Image 1 (cartoon, rainbow, N blue to C red):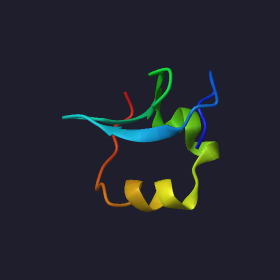
Image 2: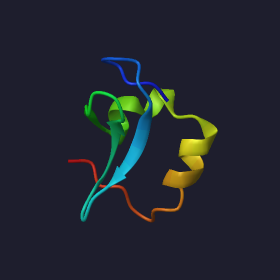
Image 3: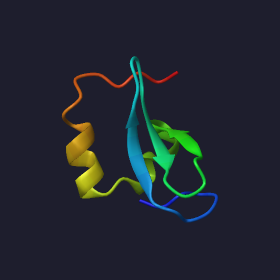
Image 4: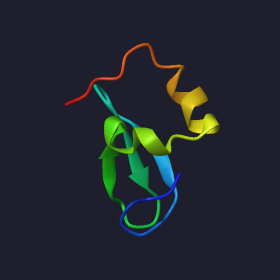
Length: 56
């Protein structure tokens, strides 16, 4: 998955009460629903492990 700002790689950022996507290059954070249209199969498999994803 690519960052919307710099085209860097997005990785899953898991915090205490939420899950976000964060760019490894520029540090931009996105809520899951903001990048849902870009999810690849690898990321979908990782996110499927979480029982609940909270949209805040």
